[in-house]
Amino acid sequence: MALKDITLGQYFPGNSILHRLDPRTKLLLTVAYIAALFLAGGTAAYLLLLAVLGAAIAVSHVGIRSILRGMRPVVVIVVLTGVLNLFYTPGEGDPLVRFWVFRIYAEGIYAAIFMVLRILMLITCTFLLTYTTSPIRLTDGLENLMGPLKKLGAPVHELAMMMSIALRFIPTLIEETDKIMSAQKARGADFDTGNLVQKAQALVPLLVPLFISAFRRADELAVAMECRCYHGGEGRTRLRQLRYGRNDVLFLLGGAALVALVAALGFFGL
Amino acid sequence: MAEAMIQTRDLRFCYTDTEEVQPVVLDGVDLDIQEGSFVAVLGHNGSGKSTLAKHMNAILLPTGGKVLVSGMDTADEALLLQIRRTVGMVFQNPDNQIVANVVEEDVAFAPENLGVPPEEIRRRVDDALKAVGMYQYREHAPHLLSGGQKQRVAIAGVIAMAPRCIVLDEPTAMLDPVGRREVVDTIKKLNRASGVTVVLITHHMDEAAQADRLVVMSSGKIIADGPPKTVFQQVDALRAVGLTVPETTGLLWELRQAGLDVPLDALSDEECAQALYQLLTKE
Image (tube, rainbow over all chains, first blue to last red; front, side, top):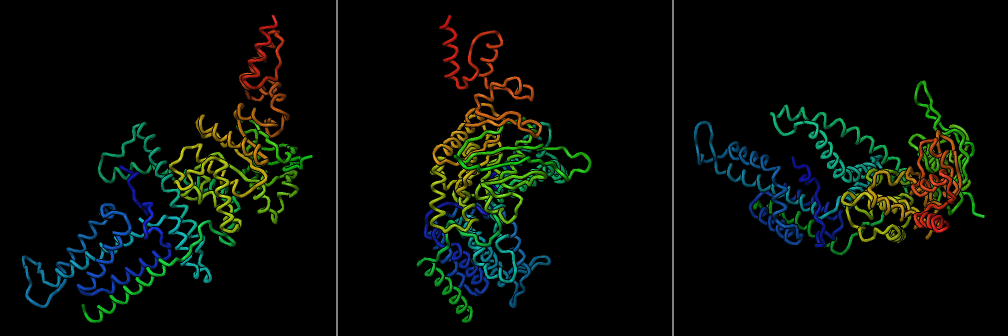
């Protein structure tokens, strides 16, 4: 089991124009892009969105290979969606293929292609967000954007703090899991053989010490945070202030234009 | 005359949540720590030294007696934030005190909590990281650093709060010898260069020997207090509570027991060598 390969919320440090954008801009652009994806109906709209995504990948310096590598866990879902769309989309004309109970219509092929493209583009655009934004900046951005919800009594700051602490402790807990596994292997535990049930059972003695240690860590961290005068989000300042720059304004205008354009294309059925 | 940074008056503490036995952890501790001094608190496991440390910035409150931090009573909840920013605390496990996943973000945590303006935070973070020699690592992820480096980041995180006193609760217990030296050197430098009061809780003799003043605890009481040179001369008393003395003192003490005339206060290797040299050339 290669625990160190987990790429949850992975960030590739860099200095591209996408890296330097305000995290709030990137969050808003991601939302705008997803909205546009769901508004898009025709080939023209898809080509436009694909071109925009390609341009974004090109300027991000992230590299297509990292994106493809991140796709691996979702391959099953994408294939399944494609297949279901292929077979279950009813068409008006004669079916192109018929065997046993299956009928494939031209509409089904279109639907499958568009649905798969839509999912892949959606995932790629969220990858671009997490690849070019450090988790802390992302959390800051979310906290700031959700700010208005504070007035309704939502614990926005607390949620953001929990998220950033969770991100901070992922590598620590992975390291700890590795250590516990090694310690148990040294005493004859077997994590690699047996069927799924046996493998799952082997994990139980791993989880117990991991949980105990996580609770102890949480306790110590809470004391350490209090010692550093943490008393909630009230009156807190930040080292890095979030500031919209000229690029942010341009990109946000671009995002709005994209959504409008896609909506207009949809109106004309393109 | 230096002002008293931390004063404890007949400090008593026992855990009250256990049902039947209530072991007394602190049993009447009277201690005055002067501003700007470097005090080491030495003791065995269970001697109450960590519990004493936790009273110094109101993590624990006394069950009897009083603790005053720069004149503020720790039992007064209204003064809590003021007390915590006066006395910073560094713990044993660096992993469990680092909050952020970028070094400089972590160091900025305390000033952010205190509502310091951003430009001032930037200045404090840079100064604190330079003071512990971690400035070049400011954009690193903490989990990729060594134990000693992580602990120095934790110390920087406390310095950035601009406290007048730092209490370190066995900061080197989880570190290798290199990490230990890094941390102890950093602490000494802070005390000498910036005049920060330092209270170092430890069970390492060689670390304790570097302080200006050494307080030895056993069973919740102070059993010896004074400059390290004087305290370590009480070899019998220290051994009685399960503590050893530094090897230099131990050697000289054995020689003395054998009837040779050597001074007991030669604590450093050089001083000890000098004393032995004088003994040998006297013949």
